[in-house]
Image (cartoon, protein in one colour):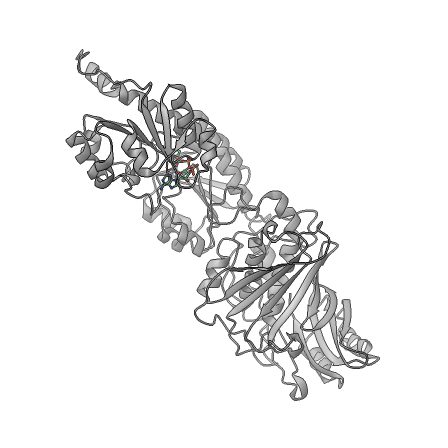
Length: 638
Ligand SMILES: NC(=O)c1ccc[n+]([C@@H]2O[C@H](COP(=O)([O-])OP(=O)(O)OC[C@H]3O[C@@H](n4cnc5c(N)ncnc54)[C@H](O)[C@@H]3O)[C@@H](O)[C@H]2O)c1
Ligand SMILES: O=C(O)[C@H](O)COP(=O)(O)O
């Protein structure tokens, strides 16, 4: 059974492909360009066509002569080739500017300096950050910089990647980043152990009043009876969030002889069981634990999850450790629970507001131990994080897909290399399909059919869908589309993209046998592209020897590589047609690089697909339209 995925829902028509008159072929109206944001992929030797997609705005010229009336329509030509190379981020002329707004390990800075101009400006105000960001290609932050919507707006499309040198990305407005097509990457692994060790340090020092006793001695006291602690062995620790840090804390707590239970709605129970940790419900965890250690991210679902209600359910005298995020605790409720004795002690590394106000009751509370967000602050972790984020940011600026992308699908390297030629095919099919739409028709829905011999579940199409979306939208709007914002932009423009995977009897060696793009409920300026009775514009392509080919236009089979621009003609099948069209193009020194003819029956309708190296002028296209046997034709720009 073919599977269908709805990429986005639709509300209103998105756009109308442009159409102007024959005389409007001048290239003087420069299309809007923005610098090359995130490319989808790097160039690889195995990829026949450059995948480093600079952010140009290639609109297209299209000419069609419809049936007997032979109306000529043309969309304005844009100087595609003039904008591409200049805008490429890693060109020889310009080095990317990387703003580092918080202290980063030297090894990471070194990596960044080898690639771009690094501006280390710490403690910037929001206003200064907004001023600076407009000239930056990348921004690297820790938890202290708030990367708000305002920052993305101020970047005016220049900012391509935000690197979070650490795990938590709650200080980055991910929605805004996605809308602006800005990739967000983090460094999720290098500080795990440091955070877990800090959690254990707080657990032990809280239980034995280390911080309070230390302060008391420094104040000249010797209070042995006052600082009698509690033992850890045999006590129950509830680890809330069994991710990287939580599981390391659990492991260490087991080593201290504690009973460990965990609550994590998403973690696989067998991973916990494997280290002797039982997964329980939230209520069970907090009501049975002697110690509760927090290790979940701050999300809308976890915000203030520890509040008056939850403190009402905890065991009297519970002790709480938080090295996750301050915002998961309602801090006023915690003060109340401490004052009432329901919570005996708390050890906190993180706060709702950082730094917390000087008169914070929580910080000043005598049964609270505090550290200024030091969980990740070991020499080792900071060097590791710096290298991890520098590599991710440099990779993203080079156009590589980041393994630690937070707001884009992570596509494993082996999948990526296999899909690379199909990615090119996908974009080109989208680009061709939209040029077949007649002016005046709004495109509301596109359907993509992937034919493959493989199990549909084995086919990750997110990248392909993004590229088809890019192909459809970019030529006719000023939107810049990448893997980060493709689905968002499609939805915003009311374009619904549905996907279907069809299993076919083909070689399982190839991930995809063919990709078909259908545009529904639109008129076509090339009627032959409309297939069957459904009235959908339909084109299909395959990858042959690593090169994308157009193999079907409407009901006609063709076979032409998708490397240059394309002329599609429908004519009465008769001798001499190739020569006539070839002569017209030859007169203008336009080289035909590839051509193919598909027909329904001998001496009936045929489609000629001609790939040309150069762009024919309007005069030549007009002459092609005037060849008597040619019933309709369209010029498509790739
Ligand atoms: N204090 C520090 O310096 C420091 C250092 C590193 C990490 N952190 C913070 O620690 C937290 C965990 O980091 P990590 O690297 O282990 O992340 P992680 O993504 O590996 O683990 C988070 C876990 O929380 C779970 N989770 C999500 N919602 C939950 C909920 N409602 N209840 C319970 N569990 C839930 C997830 O399923 C996941 O297993 C993050 O908030 C991170 O920002 C702080
Ligand atoms: O989420 C994290 O990685 C930690 O909170 C560390 O934050 P920091 O980089 O500001 O120390």
